[in-house]
Length: 215
Image (cartoon, rainbow, N blue to C red):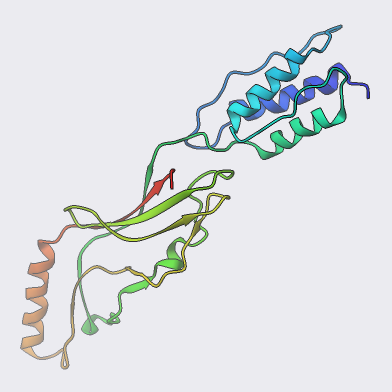
């Protein structure tokens, strides 16, 4: 088939657009030069485009470039352009999911006893990485000022989203809960005051999503 200069430059421009606009966590790449009038394509031109696309996503593979141009060569390049970025960051990453200040809660204040929610509701479907790379996992770390503790873990799918099917619950209210049978009794107020003293010495509860790139 015939390949025009405009068609080839359109491909180069798409590759350059990808190279200069990476997702978060990835570094931009240098661009390729457009071809000028009367430029004769070579295997080197094709190879430069393929190399740039492999730098953008190192799982891209290409068949050997034939002596005579084939549509399959361009089809492979277009497929890699559509695939976009992947696997460009091998560093672990932390994202704070929530931070809770300690409080005194009580049925006297209208607070329910259960101050938790299912972890699945908080994180399922959450995008924490770019698409196109398998083998990533996550951990949820709980920290109140000491050594962080892992409370749950799971997989990140190939679209960069969290999958979690466990039963762990996380706090949506943190501190001390006081239940009073009679909120008007002096003993109840004393219990609330004592709870406030305890809360004043507690640290902030932080939930952190720790993303791990290598399974």
